[in-house]
View 1 (cartoon, one colour):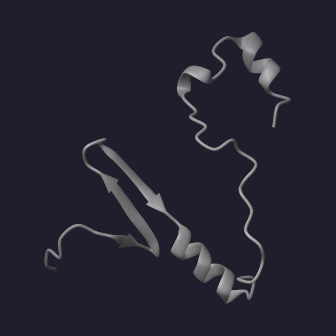
View 2 (cartoon, one colour):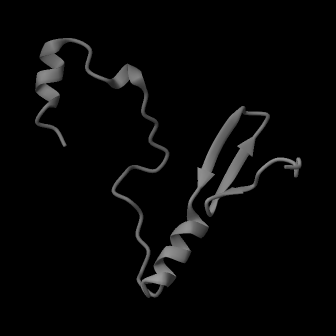
Length: 76
């Protein structure tokens, strides 16, 4: 085994690093394109997911008391 430097791709997914902001992420664009080509779906129109762009979720938004948890049981 030899050191080949920092990994850029793992299992077809790109590793995205932002050292100043201390962020680490994975981009699945190449993986998804290969998947779509494999099943001949690459000519389909891309659409954005039904999530607001720039939406940030955190643990602070999770229900904490039993009453809140029960209320969220019926929310998809």
